[in-house]
Image 1 (cartoon, helix red, strand yellow):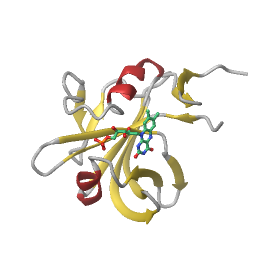
Image 2 (tube, rainbow, N blue to C red):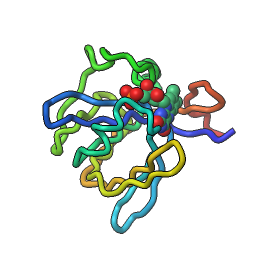
Image 3 (tube, rainbow, N blue to C red):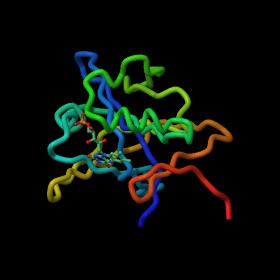
Length: 147
Ligand SMILES: Cc1cc2nc3c(=O)[nH]c(=O)nc-3n(C[C@H](O)[C@H](O)[C@H](O)COP(=O)(O)O)c2cc1C
């Protein structure tokens, strides 16, 4: 019953391989210093790259990016094919059209149960003015409906 936004966490390995997965476990932690968190299943294929890399980016998806959210949750090896992006200052891919992005230093990780909690230190961020957010609730995607 807890509605969330939807993100795609991205990174580039030292060998240049692009990594990315859909995650809705994102949340804010601290303003001073600016810290965010998200959690990754221990069994995730991207665990090795994301836990050892120095940086990752958290892309906050816009309402018109539902297909990207599904693609990056699919486990498909070709999930990056044709996905428009630019390279952030840390090397992590920033997805075109995202509502916002955070470029994070991979500051700390906490193993808890079958997930690892990642705390990232935000080094840069940006947003797309006027973008509507993609929302996730009860296994379905939505967008905003102002009250
Ligand atoms: C809306 C949504 C949110 C998700 N959030 C997370 C999450 O926070 N952490 C996680 O480990 N997997 C999450 N997943 C599942 C991963 O996206 C999925 O298992 C993905 O294939 C993992 O890719 P990988 O095995 O290449 O790392 C989510 C899936 C969806 C559809």
